[in-house]
Length: 98
Image (cartoon, rainbow, N blue to C red; front, top):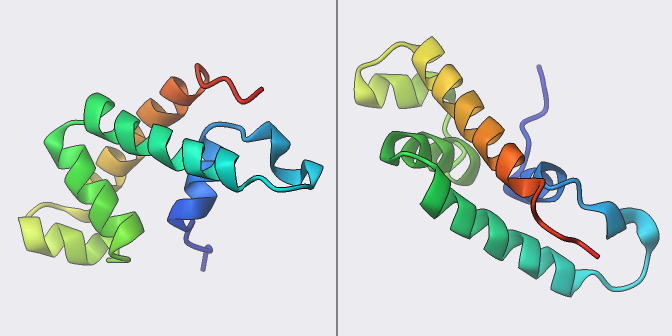
């Protein structure tokens, strides 16, 4: 079974966080990344994408559970989440981490 990506892992990898492994204190950078992701989620994603992404990454629900809650097929949930993550990754390239 694949390891589920945590929200912190997602936050760090979504923007290609360059300085993460360079040592030193990076709390301010992580805080800035989280703020960026939060804003991007509000601006870039549809209501459905926000809802599914939140339930999957934050609440830890399985895609099957989300699908049952909304009466849609699991593949619909998967595709919607993948599109949401792609949107966030595309937006993250504009984040200046220097």
